[in-house]
Length: 351
Image (cartoon, rainbow, N blue to C red; front, top):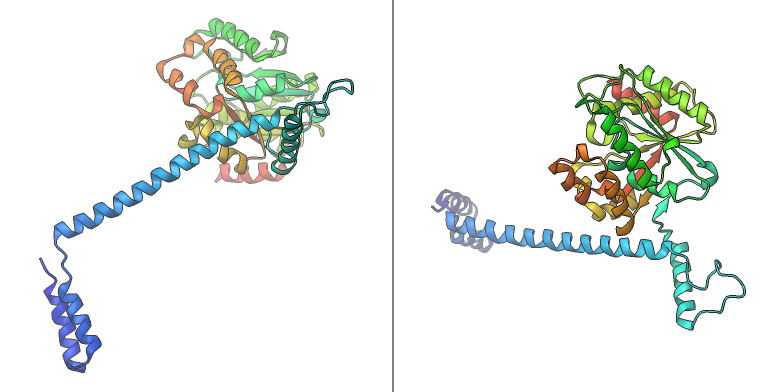
């Protein structure tokens, strides 16, 4: 199949202007030489697609290598340099290579400011409240944050779980699983508050009243003298209605100015499904797009996975896939919520 009409059209135009004009004659010859057969089109598309796919593969490989290198570099910079300021004056000086390595590490720490844990100062977070909707939320979504906070000296972590996990009529079993899971994360049993309210069932089809949830959160904040609250954002990580209700309840306290002045409000970032299952390869996006984060190494992430495995009643086949591929087993990123943020998100919610 040849586009003869195109060559005839160009020929008619060229003859009307000047039959001896060389540019028009060259254009006519070039159009006549063009062929648009199905085979030629297929070959062109095939070669272009292969080239584009090759570029995509190269870009993905480079991204993965950069994330692995950044992951390794982050934990190397987080360890104090040998022979540094942490050693006493009587300690023998390190070798020249050790001093050079320590100097390089200090220079990179000051220049890149990479940290495996980047949270507000310890003096502002000595008593932290984590508000969840169900047993297993604490390790399924907040595991890196809880583990990082419990490793801080002088930081007390409290967990307020607003339902007892009675969706499958296994509230007693879920309670025991929550206790064992928190114990592995470093939270003592005395720091766990598990609610058993009939108006807050573990049911995605039941809407929790924000005023009821807000009153429970405010009571816990005031009675425990909490300095920082961590909970879900308005998307609830998995868009579970109970998760979203917790955010709107906490946001209403912030909007009504009922929280103590020294109590900060932080939310866990919800991310798209692609990033959610990138595991440690979401590190690059986290460092560039988040203000606060916690990143665990392989050994620390294994502790979070073991805590999740304590919830045996919830360990379906897809949960096994989740704990080995989810980014929330390695990385938590948070942001601080202020009054202007709450007002904007409330307007979005109303619309």
